[in-house]
Length: 117
Figure 1 (cartoon, rainbow, N blue to C red):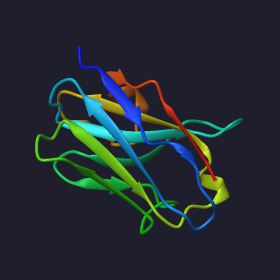
Figure 2 (figure 1 turned 45 degrees about the vertical axis):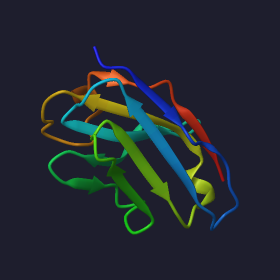
Figure 3 (figure 1 turned 30 degrees about the horizontal axis):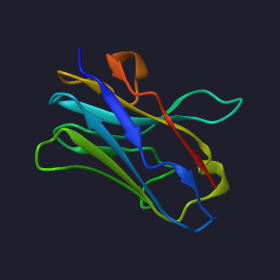
Figure 4 (figure 1 turned 90 degrees about the vertical axis):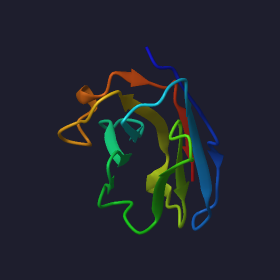
């Protein structure tokens, strides 16, 4: 069972930047970032598998990527807005997922890292 450890959260000013990292204990084909703001449903932010996918609300501002081992997932967040404030979670699945923003498709989750803008 893969383990995921997130880091890099914190506080930023509106318009600022943060970079989140997620270290996986093993390679998984599908990895993604989700977030949950207080009082709101969990939502998909971005995913990396054979390609990349983004939520409309972050497209053009956030960039998802992996390192050369494909076991570290990053989320570069630029032009941050107050509405980006949330707990951010890394998720993964050994195989492919049909819908990248379907949280139930992912089998492993990190503990979360708080982002406050």
